[in-house]
Image 1: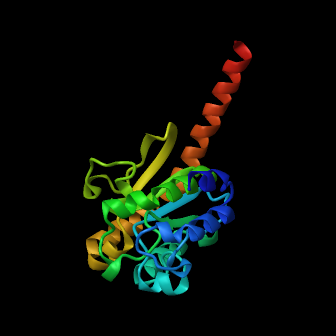
Image 2: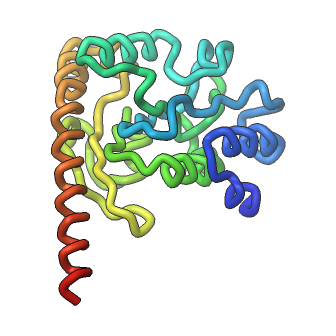
Length: 212
């Protein structure tokens, strides 16, 4: 498995590795039940949900069910083309009855999510719901930190993480839906700011390299 993941240097190769590994993964009995991520390798924004649902399993795409429609509709409303972002889940298969993913299931799919992040090197990671948020911010409550940008050290790499409510939660509460839409409206400005920080850091490193 480790060698296969090491050799998966593109999203296409990673998808093949994920599908070929189905027999060693929980929640799946065939390749057809594996739901890989979706989006271009040059995506600046990387969305992480929790797990696929029934409609996602049918279409083999993330976020196409009822909550997915709200997610994609909100993307369009704030002026973000869904074809420019990457969308995935911490668990790549549907838990029975859409229950919460277990710790064991999250750990089983963790190498694949880690590899997605490694390949894309996104400017911004947006976590949708408390389970994906806990990957980077394990000791906080989503009600307290949603919509606030966090700079974290993850796998020895600096990542900018924006926690948000899951669209399924937004569908259950008018207040959460308002927060969900409001938080989405921050993404473009955050991307511009993060890009500036990365350019300034690169400039600083180049100056230091010339000085020493």
